Length: 229
Image 1: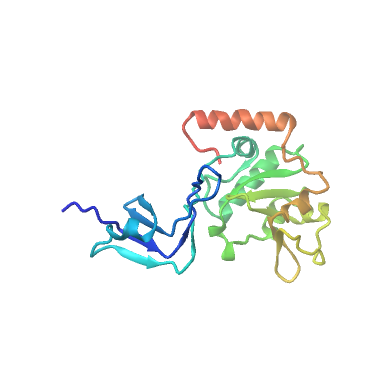
Image 2: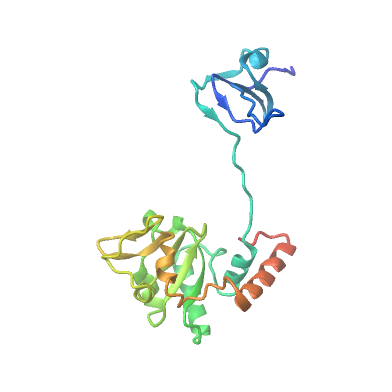
C-alpha cells in the first residue's frame, strides 16, 4: 500500500540548508526526512515526527553536521582530447596491452621528445602501482609521463625521473606523494606530478596549438555522445 511515511529520518542534527532570513542569518534546522531519493522535510523534530512509521529508519545524529551530497559529473575535453592525440590507454585492458600501445606510439613518433598520454587503470597492477622498469624496457631513450585514468597519478620511466631531478632523497611535496619501493619509484601522486614537469621540459599542452588541437578532438568526441575524460 502507498505510504506517506519517510524511509529515513535524521534528528538531533545540525542540518545545513543554505536558507537565510531577510537579515541574512542562516535558518537552523535539526531534522531531515527522506523518502526514496527525495528529501521530503527539513526543519525541527516536530516537522518530521508525523513521517515516522514502523519501517522508517530513525537516526539520532547527536549534534552531528548533515550536509547535502556533493555530486559532480564533468569532463576535461581539452585534456582528454590531447591524450587521444598521444598515448590513449583508456580503452585497453592490462599491463601488456598498455606496454604494446606505448611501444607502438614511441616507434611511430621518433621525433617526440616526451612520450605523453594516459588512461591506465590501477586495477591491472599489484597494489595499484606499475613500475618504471616496464616503461624503461619499451622506451629506454626518452622520458615517459602517463597519467592514470583518474588523472591523480602519473606513471613515469627513469628518464622522466632524471629530467625532473627526482631521486631517492627527494622529499614528498606537501600536497603529493612519490610512491617508493626502497628507492625512488615510479608513480607520482597528486602534485608530486609537478616535480617531473617543473623544468617545463614536458609540454603538457595547457596553452597554444596543443591545447587547441586537444579541444577540437575532445569536442568532436563529445559531439558523438561519448565522454571524453
